[in-house]
Image (spheres, one colour):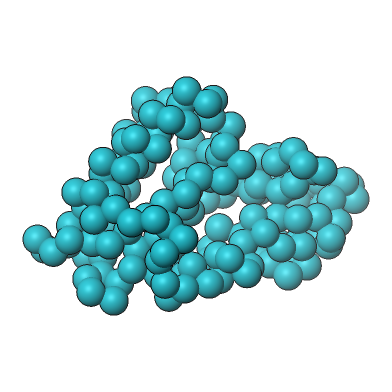
Length: 160
């Protein structure tokens, strides 16, 4: 069952998929429509899942799941990954590669391989104050409070 992302409780489980490029406005409308359809039908062992989504900076797809009534099962998680893979193919983007880093350069969101990010840190092109996106947050509260943080407050700190 699709619900407004803002209405999900802070304990909701979160999955963040970052794209290697920004989506166009037309792509965003299609993705929102497809996500709405998928989440409206998303189930775990026949039970409706109460889920919502938002898209940030035209490149991050955030899915939230209220697990108070029904939690995600292996099959339902597989279905969501399959859905994301379909988006990857349709829009020729990478959404599942966790070895890449997104960070802010002013208002621009940069996307680099971990290797390039490390090199930028070594070359002092980024600092401990650089705003990074910590896509490892596990629930909505962590997402709201610790997703966009200075590199010094994230797992990225080992590089700066």
